[in-house]
Length: 243
Image (spheres, one colour):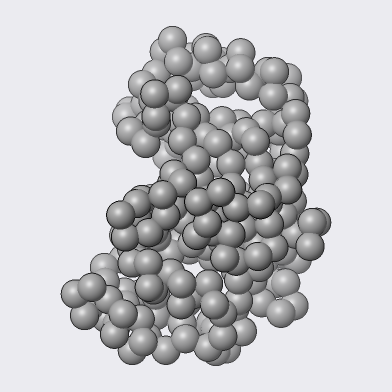
């Protein structure tokens, strides 16, 4: 199993919580200037599903609230509503934050491996390998995750599902996303369900996130500008309120 460095360097990540009505205006501005992400459906949106992991002491949640400068969070992620062998690919992701910048590593999983991680408990790398479609050993992300299930008792905590619009600009590796209709659930199996019972967590709200390597063109910054200040909006932290 190979590890993909989704972001080859630490990237700037700017996040803004805004009213859903304002998100429509920003979407129209960006849509007139930038192409949409390849995941987008006919309406320009796609569904994002994440299953987040944390320790028994909620270290990831605590570090987020305390603003710890270097921290990591772990999740399973897929896109769309058809999760599984005939549906959208599933990845194990490690998202690292350092001094306000972000980096992501990820590895693909098959459905059996994803179910194993969602069950919780101590996981051996050999078991992930045995469940692999090609008998490949886990990559560095998978091995580290397995180690954390032993050393820190990392376990599934919450599922978050939302709708996303994404726009990209290759120069500067710029990506702007607008997330709406955030729903949450404390049951890990909701990650795999086609129509899971979820709780609307932020009705009437949207999140705009701007990511770039070193340079953000002024015209994109203007198109993505919001009426609100930058925020530390966290979907995982929001989900944990509804346990």
